[in-house]
Length: 460
Image 1: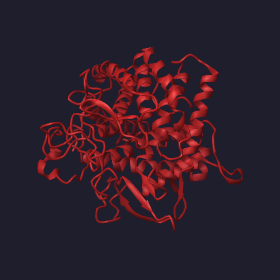
Image 2: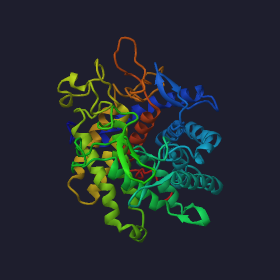
Image 3: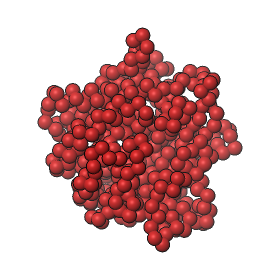
Image 4: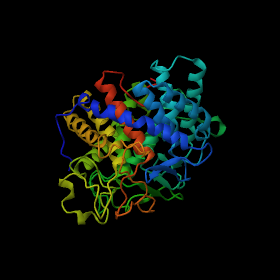
């Protein structure tokens, strides 16, 4: 399990963060120089070069969002111009994309970050530019909310690109789109001009995910371990009943794919922060603030604890906590993750995502006077201290990736295995790189007493 350090602070991590931004800048420019308008989006690296896999183009917002974060952190206007121009030129189709559940990934990372910078005064005030970003964000939330499946007993979920029967754990992090759209005063319009609340759908999706994607050690099945997470939950469309857990990118439905776990660990705490911005009256129709927050806090705590207990001491997990060859590594949870081994790869992208979730959960609890907050806060700093530094941080100017040793799709065999290795290693992913930048910005702002970074900063 993670050996939580208590001596770390955001200020102590500033040298590593500054090194990250220095390494990041030429990589963003290199990727942009290689990208062809209209071509498939960069997704993961092969031998250090970003390559595309036309699937759902769920990473394009991370490409341009990375440039926007680079400007935010460093003030280099080259990256503001790049991120703003590419968002305007190439992101419009993502706003109205009815075939995916990834609206928060693509559009809040671009239009949302730009709106936030406007609100913070980091971009010169321009009413028409603000209107442009707000309209994009209103629309993306409504389109995402329209991908809806009702379930037995009430409630429902935003279904994945696999179809209406499929709920992905990933989507909890993409609920950002509904949050921002709701805060901007928007609704989804249905038949006969029925107004459908984005807040209601957000809460219902969060509850369905909490009920069916996360386990709590309450006897659900023979593999019911508290905090364990299923990547996919399958429902019967004929009667709305849950049928079974499943996994697309993990080893099995009964093991925990660590990036799916990471989306949960990060997604619920940032939604708890957003819920704090709403008036009590808005939450009354859903049982009141305490009841709503409980829906989000229970899975946040369970999955955070699972991550801490099922990750090696340095905070970097293997790609699946039940991967079939892990037993060959011996007592792997009581030492640092072994990047080079003959059996199972680590996944640094899961660590980059999770670190921010642990920090936000810790801060949320600390502000409530909950003593548990210190544990998660220190754990988040521990993970960040590892993932933002070498050997995970790539300072090689010839490698386009920023955070090394990420895994994309192990079951499908999409990850590059270098010569002489039996497992994938040494490569990067667009989501891992983006979330490492988000993590670095989050900590940098805390260290420098700058405005607290949230995805909803432009609307509250």
